Amino acid sequence: MEKDLQKSSNASVAKGLLQSEQLYNYILETSVFPREPGPLKELREVTANHPGAGMATAPDAGQLMSMLMKIINAKKTIEVGVFTGYSLLLTALSLPHDGKIVAIDVDREAYEMGLPIIKKAGVQHKIDFIESQALPVLDHLLEHGNEGAFDFAFVDADKVNYKNYHERLMKLVKVGGIIVYDNTLWQGTVAMTEDQLSGQDSFWKDSTDALVELNKLLAADNRVEISQAPLGDGITICWRVR
Image (cartoon, rainbow, N blue to C red; front, top):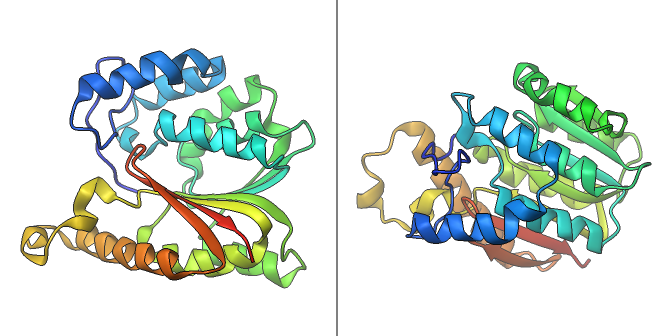
């Protein structure tokens, strides 16, 4: 879940692939931050002080995800990878009062950093946080009759397992539902040549290779309509059509 740690002048994490930070900040200040709920702003600013702040969901990507959830009237969602909970809180605020989120992460400590804000926002009752690796939880859900039970899923976790998450989520998310993958452009490394990637450490190289494979898989998967959007570090939106 490593991401760009560069910070913009407004104390958020500048994660856009736009070449101009000034233009990226214009987008945030003009159309994203004016619509950002107060609890989300508070959590974003708290997270900015975390040494791994770059792992938080980009607010422009979050704004689009919130709209998508509202368009499809999502009520039941899955989140693979939580960190301090920006995307989790965004989801909880986007769902109706009786909405439910299965949120999976191996790091409860990071989640608890944002938990007081989530509680203050009055949406903790929507969240079932599970401290675990994701694959066993997804398999458990499938084994207990949850095929097609979810409307929306968001994945922002270990990139090498994205392909494995996809096959399980395609069973858990209903036809007409949406799955969103974060970091699918991985700071542009997915478009680099082998020579350009030669200096990467094993974590970055393995993650890049896994995301290149995922992008090819999603492009060829006729069960979904896709849109890869250059928001944040790149998100791929998958609408399940069969």
